[in-house]
Every structure is written in C-alpha cells, then in structure tokens.
Image (cartoon, helix red, strand yellow):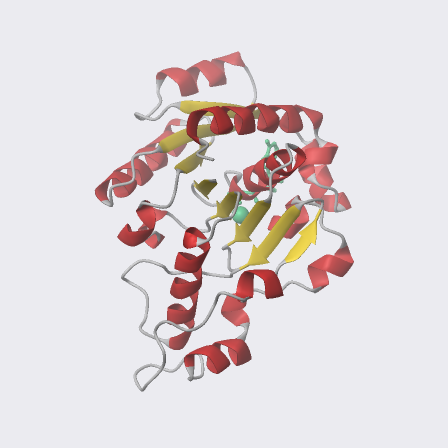
Length: 261
Ligand SMILES: Nc1ncnc2c1ncn2[C@@H]1O[C@H](COP(=O)(O)OP(=O)(O)O)[C@@H](O)[C@H]1O
Ligand SMILES: [Mg+2]
C-alpha cells in the first residue's frame, strides 16, 4: 500500500504529475484511487477521462444535499448542531468513476487543518479525508490543491510520501523549502522533490545541487505537447512520451523505496 500526497505551488504541475503517476501505477497492475482536492477540479482532464465519465463527477464539497443528509445540517451553517463524524464509507465507491484502472474522486476544496470553519461541509470533508487515508487502497494519489497546512497532524502517519513539485528556479525551491518546514513541523519527513518543466541539463543539475534537503525523485521535461494534450482532451500519459517515461521511472522508484505490501 502506498499513499502519496502531491503538493507545490499553483501551476507547477501537481495535477499533471498526479495524472501521470496514477496511470503509471495502474499500468503496473495496481489498483489506484486518485483524489482531486482542487476547488476547480482538473485531474479528470489530465487523465483524459472521456466526457461521459467526467459529467458523472461532482466535487463532494459541493454536494449540499449529501452534506445535509449526512451531517444533519445545511452547508454554510455556522453554529447549531451537526454530526462531526458523518458516515462517509460509501462515498469513494458511490461518487467516483473508473477509467483504465484509475478510480477518480473529486473532493473539492478541502481544509483539513485546524483553521477550517466549524461547519457541516468541513466536518464532512475532514471525515472523508481521514477515511481515505485509513482505507486499504493499493495506491492512493492525493492531488492537493493547497500546501501542507491543510494536512492535519493525524494524517501524517498515513501518508507514505509527499512529493513537492517545483520548477527549476530559486523562487520555486524557496517555496519547496517552506513546504518542507511546514511538513516537518507536523512530523512528516518523507518528502521528495520532483522537478517539472525542466528544459536542459543545467536545470537538472541546479535541482540536484540546490535541493532544499529533499531527495530528487525525478524530473519531467518541459514539453509544449502537455498543453496540446489538455486542449485535445487527451491524457498527458498517452500523448507525451517523454513525460510518460519519466513518470514510469518515478513510479518504479516509489515502489522500490516505500511499498509495504
Ligand atoms: N512538463 C510540462 N511542460 C509544459 N507544460 C506543462 C508541464 N507540466 C505542466 N504544464 C502546464 O502547466 C500548467 C499547470 O499545470 P498543472 O499540472 O495544472 O499544475 P498545478 O496542478 O500544480 O496547478 C498547465 O497548463 C499544464 O499544461
Ligand atoms: Mg492542480
């Protein structure tokens, strides 16, 4: 079992990497659950899910009726009574879709840390998130929208690896160092760096020498075909061979380094 959280600043390539790794693990014969925790979900697109399946997906965070049914209160309500540990065990199967051995669940914006409001939707999402981490999925890929401040202490024990996606710039590595500090503060020290949009050997060596105290899992080349795939509704994994290869090699490394069967 492997639970992998993918973090990094907006636009660095978290969703691209999540899609690539999810499909790489699925093609290795693994059962993959991919979770899109972005308020504007786009992992289904990066995975090349067909339109008919995408239409079936809705972020759990936006399912007001479901949240009310499970917590006993309408979303948006502050104060008053609601269940803080609603039933969620049926949600992954019921609201996810499966395509080419990748099961995808859209959660929507998740505020897992302590800072979230005390309201029905946050109770629902926190409980669901914890449930996902407890589940015995073969491979769990979490496409995290925001940083690790959204990962509560309790979840740390269940995340096997956190991948921090960076671009080969000093600024991006500075952000990665901040993420590392926040992660270490909550006790998470199984961190890896993944370089994305890498254009040449200098940029690779920059990432290997300036790494902010994290091993470099691998790099993904900059490739205009990534945007093209998005425009055409194709999966990056199928459409961009260089990224496909890089992802397969990262997936293999992850299996060697941290798989506990
Ligand atoms: N290796 C790459 N080469 C070229 N463009 C890329 C690459 N990786 C990601 N992109 C582009 O960068 C943008 C942000 O990628 P995305 O994976 O959505 O980032 P995030 O999920 O971190 O916000 C998208 O337009 C995507 O097509
Ligand atoms: Mg994203």
